Length: 456
Image (cartoon, rainbow, N blue to C red; front, side):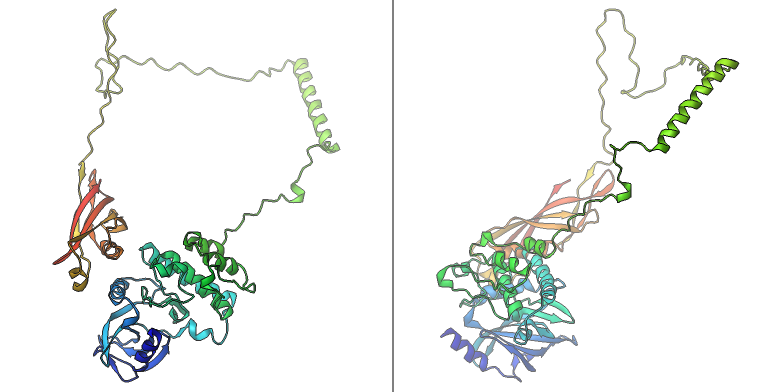
């Protein structure tokens, strides 16, 4: 029912329509079971081709999907397509979702019906996809929709579609075994990447009977290191799957250092007897030494080496007045016989010049959370982000210290914290690095942040 309905809804959309009153459908670019893509143009003055992808509203958790797309709009990576706009629209009385992205010259789904990728092309594809996934996973985000239709080629660059987080309610081979339980983690992207790689190299996804519980069959024709990568990506247990770091290690194994080999002419047989020439040199040296000793005895030569004792240094006059010294170098004072020994002087550290001056917030930003999501919060959601600030006042690193009950709000807080600016702390009159805790509080009517400097 869902597939038939989605196909009917998508089929009702035709070139010439205007989506959401803003985006004209100029040309159809492609269609899948759950989406249609069209060429469109932006209405914000940018002279740039754009693509709009339309999804049936009933096929997904629309509210959660739009929230994920709001996060995607804030991201920037050279191998992740920018997401310009996302939202809901109505077509002939039916609700739809749409995203507007960069226009792609070609997709992997357009290449594979003609031919598989060569191993060199597969490596060229994997590098950018690996980089985009690493970028997302470091921000606690999962793409969740790796497909040949979402591997784009733009100006000879491979990019990943930004409409991550969209998932239909139906399942296919790209969805990992745990997807039925609603678990979507970075390990799910690893599974999808394994399926994608098999299809890219063979033009067909691997054979897998989900009902049997076994692992997909990897065709033996796939060359290394791709065979091993696919095999380790497609483990049923998410914990047993290869990681992105493991994939990189297979693609770029460390080069073993070649042992240093001595040239043949430099190798010396230490057990061999010395040559006749060498023995002749030794005998000549001994003979000259004996001749010199005989001449010294015969003619009375003085062979004792000449050595002059250095003159004694002039005596140092006792100072008439003791110079000022620090407690560490002052001479011990004279004391009466049988007097108790004076205690050893204590070294006192000099106070820091200028001490420590705490930093301050120079620029802060608040997450841009849609009002509909804030209205759904009962009470407040608290998230704590730890930021490392360099000596120039910029955030050099941000991490989630306390995620709270919602990963969505934690990700929003993490992304926002990276744009904060600070007046650097000072130690001894010099700018110093510092650590701050930013406590984000999400709720009605708006978000609030409480910054606290932890160090110095």
